[in-house]
Length: 184
Image 1 (cartoon, rainbow, N blue to C red):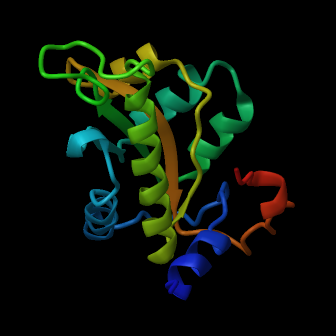
Image 2 (image 1 turned 180 degrees about the vertical axis):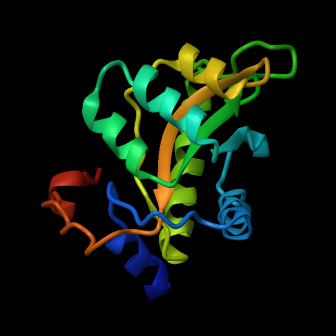
């Protein structure tokens, strides 16, 4: 049995790059983060954190100095009323209590868990009428400095957020299930 609303949300969510000027309220953002907290994580470590950049000067600094010169991302961040920086607590996901790696994936589980949480964040935002786009072309050290990331947290992704302006883009062509799955 499937939840048709979940499948619909997955299929209809798009990367939004044009936003209305109206900021998303802290109450709505907190609801989105609360929903994202249900994302699965390694041994329930829940390592993902969200820094909501509302200060125009900090947002401009990130847009101008932290996206490795990728102008498209710079423009997207500048057009968004807010920017969420997804960070993650390092040294927990994929590790044993003694600090050793649990599997051959070593610390890459951190990125995996942060990715699951970011996707859950974006789906929850879409469900609440809030547009998002996940940006990964960034200078981790410069972003960490701009947001005063706590020691032990790494930068996962940038997520410009806001209420979409205009119609959502059409879905790009998707591979068929037959192209994506193999049965043994």
